[in-house]
Image (cartoon, rainbow, N blue to C red; front, side, top):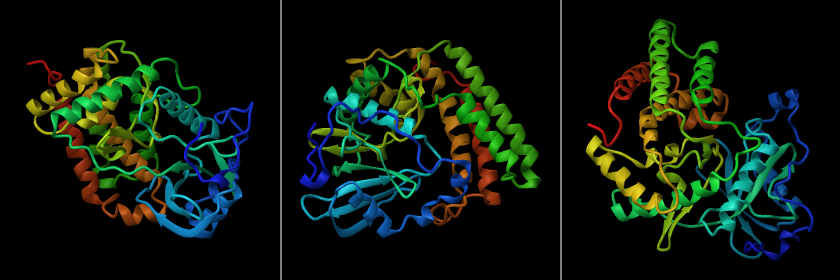
Amino acid sequence: MHLGLPKCNGIRLPNRSPFRPVPEWGYSSAMNNILTFASLTPDSVLNALESIGLRCDGRLLALNSYENRVYQVGMDEGAPLIAKFYRPARWSDAAILDEHAFVQELIEREIPVVPASIINGATLHHFDGFRFSVFVKHGGRAPELENRDTLEWLGRFLGRIHAVGAIKNFQHRPALNIDTFGIEPRDYLLENNFIPADIDSAYRSVVQQALDGVRHCFDRAGDVKSLRLHGDCHAGNVLWTDEGPHFVDFDDSRTGPAVQDLWMLLSGEREDRVRQMGDVLAGYEDFYEFDPRELHLIEALRTLRLIHYSAWLARRWDDAAFKQAFPWFNTQIYWQNRILELREQIALMEEAPLWQN
């Protein structure tokens, strides 16, 4: 498949899947403790790209990314490319290739997503212990989510994505559930003493009540289907053009309920969210049937995301970029606000789901 890359990108090798797991690099326990983004210098980035046959012109622009390190890199020939260096120790090679293969399935069905480019027969590359991928640069603007036509358009493409996501499961990526997004993050925060001592008992109590509320929501929903998701489908991961949306950054792809990719498009008061969900589903159900029982899960999934987000920040607090970008984290007022936030979620999870009075 031609991806519009410069001629220096090398040749796609026959009889080898670019999504086949390859041996892990730099993933011994010792390396996990040593390899950090601090050693990813501009020269390292350029040398990594040149190691796979790309001729860079020296221009390097760091983009606004914290989980991974993402750069726009100028080429001797052709347009700049996007290089994404994956956070060490977060995903295995097999998990990253699981994501790449899913996106490739979407491309083959002409769904507008941005895949990792195939260079020298592979989408995932290694250099000095780091794993990285290269992407063609795509422009676009944020979608206008207050526009009903925009929501319906997004719904159509999400329905198409989920129709593909339901065909089979991920082999190496985790599920989004109460264990992975609730209990495990909660335990990490408590075991590593992130909660200030004077409000520790209050946090323990409210997070347990919140998790009980999540369980109750899942019980009310019943046995809903799980499928492969985008996983982080907020407006920042949609590039809008005159031709419609392009979905980017499948780094958080997981298996979970379909509504996880829908609820983050909603905002405002209840009546606003009811209308917005109706607009999204008007397009969505042209391609994939939505199970209305999943409406019970919206506030539960929001609650899990809030707990998981605090642990996500905590796990990366030794990364200088996080301290600079999130200076308000791990302060007394931050944790006090999380307690209030979870109390609000406990009340919201007791309300009727959207479309019910």
